[in-house]
Length: 288
Image 1 (tube, rainbow, N blue to C red):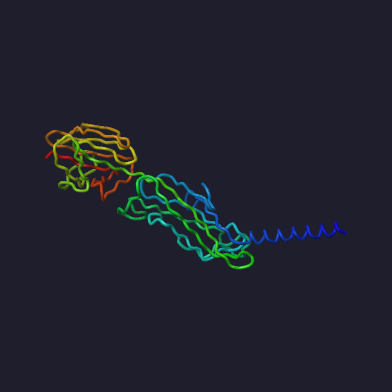
Image 2: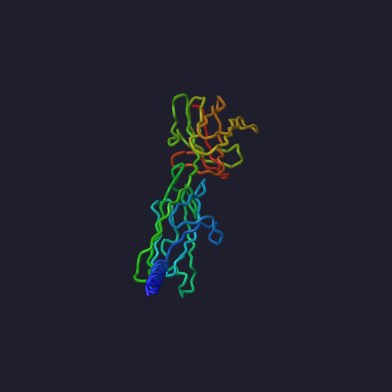
């Protein structure tokens, strides 16, 4: 008799656990996966509570994710937001993500674009703000409504995103004097010896020699062409971050400097350099 009673109690306990577990699994649940592009089903990595470390960027770039519902019930009234204005989420709202057991015929997942703004406008022409040089972060908050088998409840997913922003930057010195590139002595148009056509140059008048320092976090290939222009480049050098170089400027007239950072953006609001059609930055230096 006791054995039968124990068996009944044991079976009741198992059924109670199954019921509790099934209720736990009924609610909708978010899962976030990184994708190669919006048309690709290839998953790079995924998250339901952890961080994404994205590739480093040289200018504005879009990254793509797949938001899925891995629970049984639908998730509705979904909102997606970022706490960093330079990290733009599209779409910001989703009406419904069906659950696995849903009778809805729509997809269980939704493609999401994360546009990270760094110097150039995405899907447009022009220049916009830049990220801080180095590591940048944002938190993506995803919220929706679901049912856990007993009542409506809120479901959340919080994911942190990290990206390393590259930036081309230089400083210009003469002895202990630092020349502010935000305030050139004058400016004008001049022909370029680098086959980029006529460029808007900024002129800095002072005695030579000048010393240039790489204050960004990418290497720069520097080329100097002196006036009067010839077919010979007076100086070529590769500057790693924090490297300095004394420029071999023409003692009478000065010259033009080309800064090739492999397409890395520079701050056009602070670094008054001229952007050539080839994507390189240019600076004109002239003797006073």
